[in-house]
Image (cartoon, rainbow, N blue to C red; front, side, top):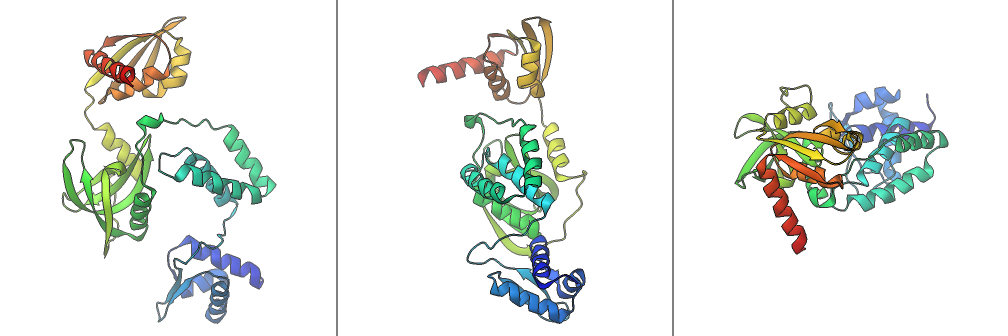
Length: 317
C-alpha cells in the first residue's frame, strides 16, 4: 500500500479528475478501506481542499468550489498538455485570457522537471502559430465560455439569447454537448429543444446563457465527434463566390501564406493564380492583403467593389 502522503496526492488527483466519485469506487481505486478513505478525506480538508460528502449507501465525494484555488496535482502528460494549451491561449481571441495565460505559463515552466521542459521546448520550437489579424477575430467573453463549458460538463440544459447571421434574435433552450474552437471562431454544439435537431451556435452570437437546473442524458451525435459536426455543418453552407486573382508573387510564397484558404497555381517565376470558393468576400480580401503584393482581380466583380470599399475606409482612417 502506498504511504499516507503519496496516497493523499493520489486521492486528490482522482477527485480532480471526475466531478463525483462513489465512495466504494474511490476506496477500491486507492486500495484502502472506507474508514481509511474517510481519514484521507479529512486530511485533504485540513489542507484547505473543500471536499463534499454525500452520505448513504450510494454516497460519495466531490471537490467543491472554495474561497481560493488550491494546488492542483497533474501527471506528466497533463503537465505537457497544460503548457501547450497555455501557449496557445497566450494568442487567444478570448478577452483577458492572453495576459493571464502568460503569467500561469511562467509559473508552470518554472517548477517543471527538466525532462518535461525538453518536451515542451521541442513542441514550441516545431510549432508555427497561425493567428488572425486582431480586427478580424471576434472577442469572446471568458465568463460566457466558462458558463457554457460547465453546463456541457454537468449535462445541464441551458437557455440563452441568440442572434443569427441575418440579425434575427431568438430565445433558445438546448442540451449542450461540446465547445469547438475552429479557425477564428468558437462554436457550441448542442441539441436544440425547440427545433428538435442538432445545431452549432457561434459563441460570439450568444448572450445571457443561464442554467435551468434540468439534467439530461446526452444524445448521440450524427457524426463521429463535435468537431466533425461543426465542419460538416459549415461545409453545407452556400458558397456563392468563385474568386480568381493574379498575384505578383511566386507561387511558393502564396502557398506558404494563404494556401490553406484556396488553391495556388504557378503562372511564371514571379506570378501565380489564386482561386477561392467562399461565402464571404472578407476572407479573400484579408488573404490578399496579407501577401503585401500587387494583384489583379479576375473575378468576381463583387470582390473589386469590396476592395474599393475597404480602400476608402482605410483612406478615411
